[in-house]
Length: 200
Picture 1 (cartoon, rainbow, N blue to C red):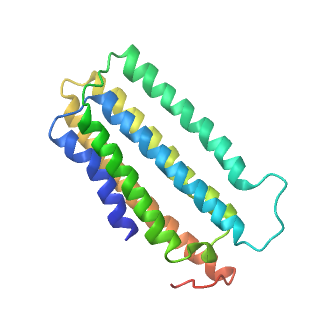
Picture 2: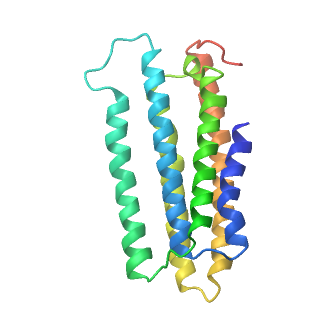
């Protein structure tokens, strides 16, 4: 199910790119929004994991630290996209409803994944707050490099749409691989720590 959700929220960007609807700024803006959705979902997962961890509460809960750290990270990323790709490079945000439709689809898919993958299966029984907090960072950091590099290349290329298509496909591949690697790692740690429902 997780892999299906990854494909679906990437299609919300890939299809408009393939149809030639969007410029670099619109694409990077949507990827920034996707990171924001990831942060919101991960924060709620952390809250759930902390509530069910059974350990002594920390003086500063990991969820609050994550909200601050990831929030700053996301804000800087958004500023970079706005300044360099939206203003300095002359990107135009002219997609209107089409952009917001994709944003709504991405948010809905993230919410669906949270409810069906996390809440319905009570996945907090198979992990720890520390692992939940670490989960998005490797993927997000790699994707930032891929997406921003793709943006720079697209701006300087004679055919920006071809570059955007290529990097959107690379992003999809990286996300699928990262999800697979993380699931194997999490399952291994779960067995090592004798978590409940490791194979559920």
